Length: 392
Image (tube, rainbow, N blue to C red; front, side, top):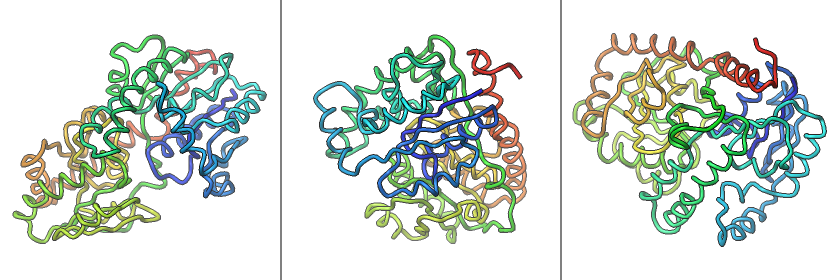
C-alpha cells in the first residue's frame, strides 16, 4: 500500500498535539507500506532536521509558508465564512506539492485536520480525514473565557468551524477521531465510515528510568500558550493549590512547557510555584514528580500530558472532562474542581502505597490501549474496509 499524509505543520519537533499525532500517523502508515508526506514548513524550521526525524517516510514535500503570508490570508478570510484554521494554512506552494505527490498514485490520502482538506483537488484517491479533536467544541468553550481581540477571534472562528467540520466529514470516504467523545461532538451520528485512532505514546521515549520521584513535587506539562492549558494553570494556582499547600506546606508545583508569557511568569511568583519552562526531554522531569495534574475545565481531544505521565509511571490527578475522553482509564485519581481535586491531590501525596499501585496500573493501561501497535492496528482495519489495504 502507498499512502499520502497531509500535515499543516511538519511532524517534528514533537511540540504540540498536532505534531505528536502526525509523527505517529506517519510511522503507523509506514508500518503498512510506503508513505509520502506533504507538510507546511515554517520559515525558521530546518527541513534536514524534519527529514532526519522521519526516516521511515519515503518522500517528504516541505513547502515553506512565507512569514508575511499568514496575515494576508487571515485578512482575506475575515469577510467570508471560511475558518481561519483553513485560510492560514493554504497556499499555492502547498497545493502544488500535493498535486506532485498525487502524481505518485497513492492508494489512500490521509488529511490531518480540516486545515489540509482544501489542498486537495476534488478527484482524489480514497480520502480519510483525521479530524482529531473537535475544534468547534474547543473554540466554543474557549470563546467565553478569552479577553479582547482573542475573545472576538474565537467567537468568529467558533461559528465557522462547525460547518467546516461537517463539510470535511461529508467529503471524506472515512473520518477518524482521537476519541469517541470528539466524534460525538463533531456530529452526533457521523455519516459513513468513521473510526477512533487512539493517541499513542512512544515506549522508547517514555518508559522507566533512573530518576526517583520527589514526594513534594507536583508536575504540570503543556504548551503554555493554549487557552485550555492557561486556564488550567490559572485556576489551579489561584483556587486549588492554596488548599493543597494548607495540608502540605512544602509541596511545589513545577510548570514545564514552552510559551510562558508575562501572565504565566506572574503565576510563578506564587509561593511554591516553580516555572521550569521548556526542556529538551520531558520524560526525566515527569519521573521526578510524585504526581502530575491535568485540571482541565474545557476543551476537546485527549491530553497527551496525561498519557506521557502514566507511561513513565507517574500517576495523574485529572478532572472528569479528561477522564471522559480517555474512557476507562487506570493510573489516575479523578477529582472535580475545586476542593475535590485538592483532596485527591493531597491524598496521593501522602500515600506511597497508593502511588505505587497507580503507577503500575497506569503503565499497564498505556501498554494495552495507547501503544503504537494499537494505532497501526486501528488504521489497518479502517484502510482494509476502504479497500486501500489487504485485511490483516
